[in-house]
Amino acid sequence: MAGYILRRLVSTIAVMVMVGIFVFLLLRLAPGDPAAIIAGKSATAEVIAGIRQQLGLNDPMPVQFLRWALGILKGDLGTSIFAGRPVLELMAQRLEPTLSLSILTMIFSVTAGVSFGVLAAWRTGGFIDRLLTAFSALGYSVPVFVIGYFLIYVFAIRTHWLPVQGYKSIEGGLGPWVTHLILPTLVLGLGYIAFIARVTRASMLEVLSEDYMRTAAAKGASSYAMLFHHALKNAGVPILTVIGISFAYMIGGVVLTETVFNIPGIGRLVVDAINNRDYPIIQSVLILTSGLYVLINLTVDLAYTLIDPRIRY
Image (tube, rainbow, N blue to C red):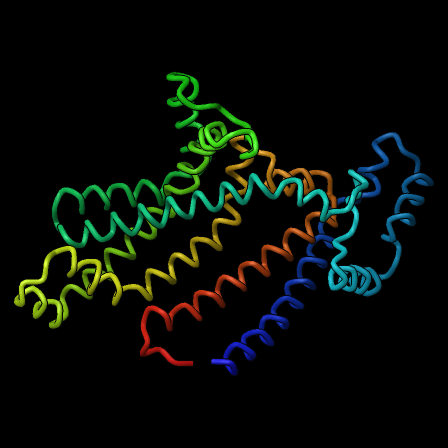
């Protein structure tokens, strides 16, 4: 196990170096000049040149990359071009809304998705199974922003049950915090519920057809014991895999959801940075999210041994 973890960590470093090079070159080679955007449309060439010199954009790309990479290793993510403040400080201010939305969405998605999948496998061909099939098709095919605007119209504009947009910190009370996150959590979680439920159903059906499950039924095991003690545990590896994938994909979904509901999180920060060509913010967010993605994959791989003791690395 220790050797496997060491090998994965070494490969992770190589992956992050490649990601860093790709992100750096992608932003630098994209059209648009951040110095010209900062200076404004009426700026002269001399003013733009001075801003480029101040930002270090005239240095060769290898020099810019090494300066940026060394700063990250020291914990310095750079300074925002437009805000003039450290990127780490700006991200820390936006972290709570994004973490709140992501954690609530994952809890909701995993709980609902696994439950629906188990029920559909238990009553395969029945009403719940057909309902899950229809729900999965809807969750896969309808874009997030369409579901978001529909739920806003129904629950916020027509019925006034929930707030339209914005975010309330948990320090201001649990009630306002929850009510402002209900709609974003529903919108962001519907697709992942459908994904997790379909995989759970398929894995459960495969396990339920095994001989030892028929033996357990013949010995008088209850439906609860068969589903949750025997079947779900043995079907856990693919379910855990899809949960890890869903959490990683959610990083991208948060950006669109925060934009629709005007939540001042990391997603909104990235959108504003892209519009302003704010290199330090975009690079820092991409690097951190890539590292989180790799960490999630490593955690899922190591968790396999807890579900299935037969797995050895």
